[in-house]
Image (cartoon, one colour):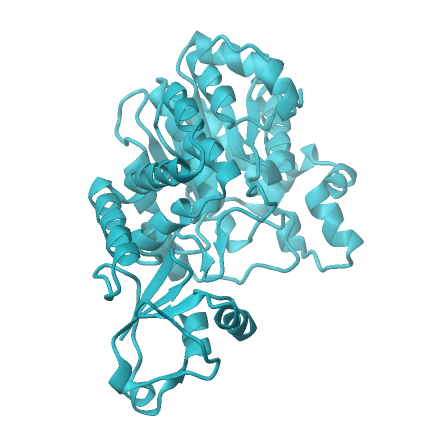
Length: 420
């Protein structure tokens, strides 16, 4: 069964975890919503989400399925984190216009070490029945024999059906290259579900809405091969209230590891949420009770800024710890209230040659991630939105050199970077 947001609203779940998932907005589509609900009621359900190791950090776009695993564990079920050590070598073609770059085994191993960090924050790992576990699909994919895969797995897949999936059809309709390597990704992901079903008794695969076709393939393979009943469920792909893709800023992706994005910048991402998104984000990305979130959602005007700070504090504490969240909030208060370059702000370091010769302010705005282009930087200056040490910049051709440094560079009243 496929459900929409509207039909999910009319579904009356019986299990604790399904009530939470529906109430907080984690459910987009499901193969059999009453069946999943009944499984949750009947006992511990092992459920998995897969993450390929394409970078050494996950980003905010990955956070929603991770939080879904967190909700399951909080309700007494078993979260399984599947790391795609094998599938990363191929790359998921879903809704992509180009082939992923090929990574070496060393790069994949390093990336896996990096992305492990966020799971340690949000899930409790161990050997108990509801403890989270992390598995790597390289454990079974690396040893696959090609003829066996074709005979035992490939025979269950219809090429006609595979070509009909939106993720594949969109590439073909645009006449974008889809390699045979990528075309096999959906078979390998389906095989993952089969292996997890056999090894761990996994009964539910979850993921983003773009994974719907891949999830359906896995369910079908498990049913055809072993005759077991398993389920699939997706979370919505998030966009802001204004329609922008969630998790992107002028500076790039909103990474979850602090070595890729400072806790202060992470805090600011949530603090700058659009008014219409605050309640939804509180439900999805914090552990605050729903009744308290609904109360906070009644805030208007200046009070809404306090609620946004609460969102930033709670969301940052989950990923980076309460200490980092408190420090980020304190840094923001100092930056907003005073003209000095506040300790703890993101810092852009110039080399000696740049300090001597000077760097154009418009270039610094781009390098600091405050604007996405020099044209945007010039428009911000012309609109009196750029400040240096709290003073509005009036000229477009300002140069910053050794005698000016350090400075606090600000765009508007919320975004600041120290240049040294």
